[in-house]
Length: 344
Image 1: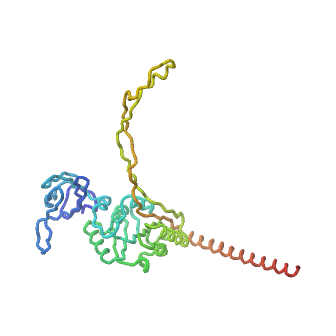
Image 2 (image 1 turned 45 degrees about the vertical axis):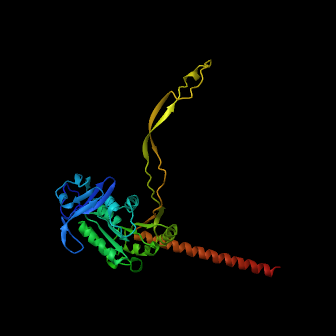
Image 3 (image 1 turned 30 degrees about the vertical axis):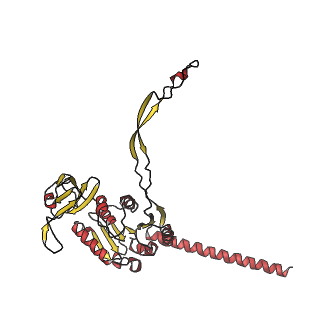
């Protein structure tokens, strides 16, 4: 399967990316497919550059040029980045700029166990699998039963099902399950109310601690999530927004005037209105429009369990001390009031 590892030639059952003049298409390499009547017919993929007989892709090299009836294109090896641009959308997806930051902030390495809540279309899941394999595992949950089933079928078709487990579950109400308690190195939440799932993330993380990340489009969601993280002893809480800006490189011509006559004080030569020469420069310019808002990433670290206990004790002591101080202030105020009434 083409998603599992890189290879040179296309085989039957692979998923390939067809590149056509800045347009990408994901094609499953099957010589025959069923029509609406359930009959097997030849698999012919229609594009703006004509028809492509999928059978002809078998045995071709990845990156090679393929002929279409009205032009040509290239067949590429599928990657999580290319898959994010071509996958069938079951929900709104997370794209590469945010995905790259999520993988960095979760501190994932091969062998990690990561929990994802909000499978959706599986865009982030493919990137997580590539990061933690060959010895790690991804547990991904979705509230919608049909979406979870489609995601698992997709992982099996791509040959990566042994690295991921997709389940239907309401994790905000039920948590991630007792079998995952104390097993996760990192937890990612893409849910409407991630603050509700913070306590479940704490239960799922290892005793040594781990990393937490949530994706939220609204700042009000971020505020409530940060408060929940503080209540559960998370540290290094921060929120960021990833905006990708592409500089356009171009060549510009600048007119140059000859001002050498200014070196001579007695010179009476008038300044030429037209430039005497031109100079070319390669410059980088900002785009005319800026990319819009996608979402806020809130990340935090859960410290080891013995430190969490210590932090909680210290917090309770501080709260008790604050309460005692308030009581003493009230008592002092009452005593002072009584003294004033006794000695008018």
